[in-house]
Image (cartoon, rainbow, N blue to C red):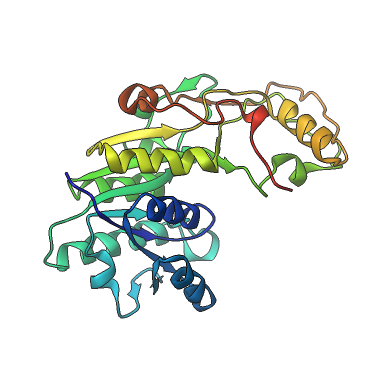
Length: 276
């Protein structure tokens, strides 16, 4: 499977750095945004820009051109709230339908999903723990995954909490009092590793596979928050032991590591690189 062109549906906080990495590696890259203001930035960087919307149907004139590519990265954060649980699955079904209508060979497709699909089982969880919507606390995500897998040449990446650079977990809890979830192990992934893993899969595609994308280390939230606050001068929150142990899950990346032989740049969330 020779991949020379890549379309990234959703060139935001993860997608734009991914596009830059791919451009520097010699790929031809198309990127979508919902913001007209970003189009000149994309052009300047060498990225062919598209203003595209999923509402949940396809809006925009260039979908066929955008979807005619060797590989497609679907990185569309699900919208919740008033739009309802089926909104995101509808978005993904619309993309899948449009792919089939292009008349071109279906691209290798990578769908960015989430480890939020796993219930808190108070143990390590692996990919086979959630295969069907009824096994998940976020069935809409699983429905979207199944739609993408149904294309027949696709990989699902279940991302943990995506952090690094200006996304610093301790910043969001600075000064808070009586946090009761300090003992819960984290399931984080640094953005540089997220970009690295997607890039690795374009060189070594794994169609039909689902992988967890989290750092191998799982320190407690309290440990991460305290270190962030110490490193960057935030007010340290206080912690209270709950009357009953808080439910948790430890998401395993072992299948990914074993399959593509990936070495994490930031294996320990206590050592993530930030730019406050």
